[in-house]
Image (cartoon, rainbow, N blue to C red):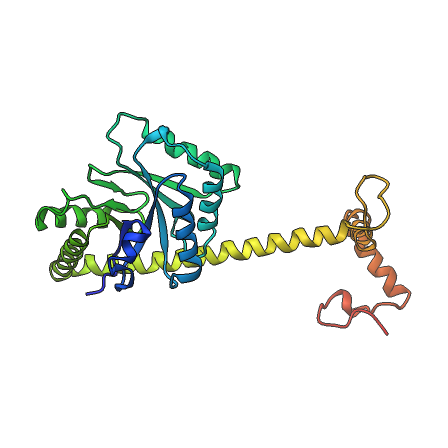
Length: 312
């Protein structure tokens, strides 16, 4: 049964996935694990998603095994990460690009300092809408706000234990649930089996609840798509407005009240705004009456918008 209430995300390095045979399995989604400042690795992922990857969502998981001690060419690595985040198929939650931080360090370090460091570097590059979530590799984790459930080996020890946690996460998640699982063929197969049988049982025993969850998952995906398209349209409008402002001000004489060069179109636009738009309404209406008296406008047009206003 194809799941319509949640999605499985396999966390793995690209080279491991390519040799596993999981890349072409149906319904699999991937969060590519990146080691900080490994430029060869991140460039391989960049090439894959832009040239070889089919149209499917993907995400990034950053492996944090050394905390703040990691060293390397940070600037170049961050630049490539920005290129990945720009991809139209990059996974978003609440219109924010989701990056998971996979904490595997055994040392006592400030795990959030590393996350904040990357967020700050992305902010400098202009990326404000990025959500970074820390995942502790040794714990069962459910983030209801962002719809993330981390599937550790502990979670899939028994079917009943998984079912209890999974149904609870489905019901309480504020957005469609995503199950993040570390790369392991056995674990992925076990998770898929447990997930399918749990959903089948839920459909039989609590059909209304399952159908409601299915509807929520479907409508949330549709809403995410509409929000994405709306954001693209807003960007398009802003771009055209910026270009229009550039055209209006790129040439011509310098305005007396400003140092910016104005074109003829800009002067006409400013004249209309500053000389006509500011006039009181009664004055504008009186002007229309004057036009009627001089025979330049028909009397009926003052009372009916469907009548031709000006005489030939």
